[in-house]
Image (cartoon, rainbow, N blue to C red):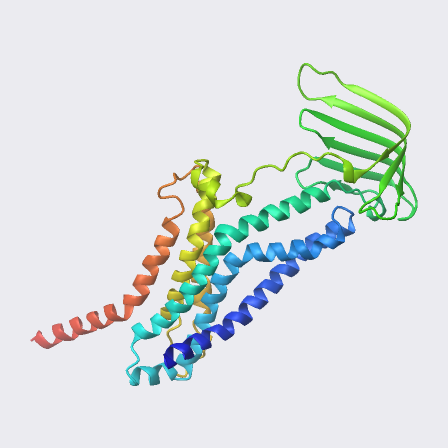
Length: 368
């Protein structure tokens, strides 16, 4: 147990550091897009921290396996470089016992990744979509700049301000297009004023010299036009279209009963993540083998190439299932199967080399 705790501790330290760095980088990347939307008035500033946290939560199912993989390579690279693995083997610590310590940690993290993939991830996706969908109803005219097209999440709303002197000045020549499903609304206003009211989450917008065009998309309904001197819009009270269905935000129970290719791909992706976590943690052990006193980072390049290839294959397999190119069986399971075969080959490589060496020695002994 002392050896097991020691090995887990050696892996846990770089694991925490690597996961923290990757999560910070991913959160910073996500924050850039959210901050741009907040500056442009398409997203309330108070929702940025929540959305960044949700994005990081979604990404943990991928960040945890890669962090574990890198941590094992780094930890065992150091142990091999400092000849600690040689000392352990001299004390009759078998490779199976070393692998058991890694499996114990990787199995625990695989259970955590399973919970994230099956339950936390769809909840985070659903909450993110709902937050952004509600933000589409907000119209912060003060934060909008002239000459820019402001497009909603699904392209259902487009806003353009032609002229504006400063954020406190009224906007001139405003165009708004709203896609309502069976019809499209196009609004033109000569002037637009932001109306602030205390105690309200948002604020009303007064459109002066407005013309509203209601354009039908199908037969049985004619186009209509309304011209008014002034109209007050409350973006917070506008009826939003229902959220569009997305497989990523669907519950795991629903995906189990669905036969749609996108749902099948999403379900298989969720179940494959914990399997990948365990396999990657185990594969990092043979990949980190190095000679004593060799640089501890000597095998990092190879390890990164192996992971990059596996991640590319996984994403390709998922895309093929989503588009129906590959049936549910084999689905995307061939990618984890290839990873398992790679693990088996890496574990058996020393025994195979020894067998060939003994075979060659035997042939030399019997040769005249």
